Image 1 (cartoon, rainbow, N blue to C red):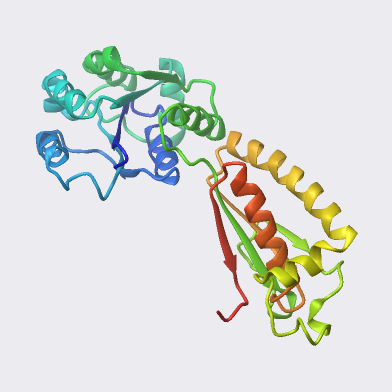
Image 2 (image 1 turned 120 degrees about the vertical axis):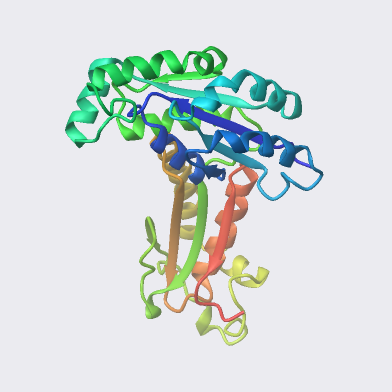
Length: 289
């Protein structure tokens, strides 16, 4: 059984907790925002139970200074969680006061702890309340000078240190231009530059999943050259997409009907990328079976 992962997100209001939680959700974590502190003890019990944590092996919860009971009993519950899940991590989001004030002013939002006072007073109160969490944090991220993409990148780097992180979710999709270009594709490649096995009566009834079709395609010099070059390009792009915090990538390869050439190229590229450790989802849109 894969050991469970639990990440607690906390920090100053306006420092980027929502972006962090969204990034973790895209990375496959089950996320709970503003987790009520009274339920923390129940979470401990749930994890202890034999079936309690199997459904959501990767869990991230966000808690903040509005949960006074959470801060009062934080050390107690954190110690319990640490015994059950030794890998539990705390990511603490911070930013300097000037930046936080600018963010609240620009969004015209009221600081949650400054109902009767200034934003600065609310920030100061919050900093003092969050000291117990800050002391236990495994990762402190100062978002003062980070944009959304840079923050996502920081979060992804943090969770890559955890086991079982899959990285970018990649879909290779074959299609036929006769039925239209897929609207959700990030990259579209036209593979109609090689001969079409459809016109060979011995191959017409087969699909690109069959070895005979793959051999027919690969026996053509332009096909091998394309595969080598396109694989290198994908390796280059995937690394940079991950740095930018992209969670999903759909690469579409199209031929005329979506039965032969595009399917063969998709199958061949999927195997090559899987061998390099990428998580690949293969979809043949226009195959009936």
